[in-house]
Amino acid sequence: MGKSEALFERAKKVLPGGVNSPVRAFNAVGGAPRFIASAEREFMTDADGKTYLDYVGSWGPMLLGHRDPAVEAAVLEAVRGGLSFGAATEREVEMAELMCRMVPGLEMVRMVNSGTEAVMSALRLARGATGRDKIIKFTGCYHGHSDGMLVKAGSGLLTNGTPDSSGVTAGAAADTLLAEYNDLASVRARFEAEPGAVAAVIVEPVAANMGVVPPEPGFLEGLRALCDEFGALLIFDEVITGFRLAPGGAVERFGVRPDLTVFGKIIGGGMPVGAYGGSRSLMEHVSPVGPVYQAGTLSGNPVAMAAGLAMLWQLEGNRALYEGIEAKAARLAAGLREAIPGVTVNQIGSLLCVFFTEGPVRTYADARRSDTARYGRYFRHMLDRGIYLAPAQFEAMFLGACHTDEDVDRTIEAAKAFRG
Ligand SMILES: *Cc1c(COP(=O)(O)O)cnc(C)c1O
Image 1 (tube, rainbow, N blue to C red):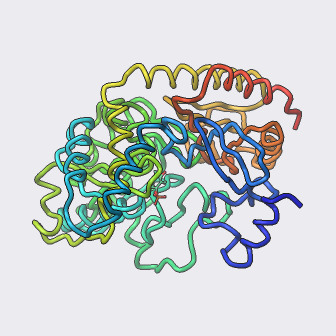
Image 2 (cartoon, helix red, strand yellow):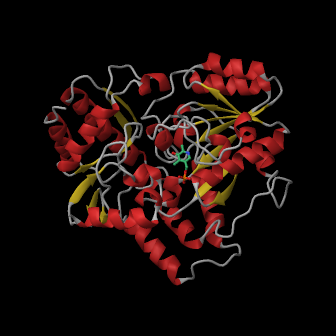
């Protein structure tokens, strides 16, 4: 038995399923999960000393690769200044200023500790600001694990075959209305069914938890118009797309302005961070200025802020970096399309997904037609060749600045040998 397997046996005794987040388990693809000992640039090394080319990138934060020197140095420096004070610090101001400078329309932010927490808080703010209760979300979009968002959520839940979670009250679920991604008529129908009741529409501007499904032209614009028509707020969940699709995220890339934006993943550079923000007038509903209560002992943590700042400083105005990654992602997508018969490869920016179905994949229903057993065989084939993909069909491949043309070629060659 290898070390990963031995660790997994031990882990299963003290951690549910042997993991601290279900997407890390290999339930959807079979086998024991790899326990990672260390990582460097675009590579991860497991407990048995086997090195993998990493296309998960910690599910998004590692846009600059593992152990980015500037991020590492900033973290070490912050650590020496003290881990947490429970009081305001300069780095929090710098972080908020930087985010507001980079994201069009963003005027104020509140830092929290995870994407889940940021979504939960943004929804409370939307309800507080509008005096309405209902939220429209899209089937197959994932917004973290707060109760109201676990109503047919995508990603881990989708893969585990449990369309909603036990433990979520009927009351919480009843306040969430489901619409179909890339289907404006379904959104209008929800609004018309409950006129005056909808506080907000929340959407991943690029759906990246049902595989990767980009918005069709006009979809995000249509959401903006519907929200305006019905007096609801538009919330972009940019936990994946923020600072990834462009320095200003999806807001910049698509030119559609949401009322609130939610961030996570990249803004922590690998540390646990989330944030939500919007216009000053909306954000001033949040405590201590306004009546929407939201707090956090470790929010704006100095080490996390140091990591995020070091990350974002390298991204600000760095078009060349984004163009470089996108070119590699496009070449990888084209190569994989040719290498594996009968697949559909969606790609936008540094995100891509190989769906094991004839295309096109433009909706959640299309994505669900994927042959997940075949994905599992593909995953194991690639893992055997030292390529670490997401251990589930309905996840993105994340490229970063460290991935090279040689990495892309090697990945395409490995995929060509797949006969499953
Ligand atoms: C990962 C993710 C979240 C949840 O963030 P956590 O930090 O895991 O709580 C929310 N929304 C989207 C779009 C995500 O991809």
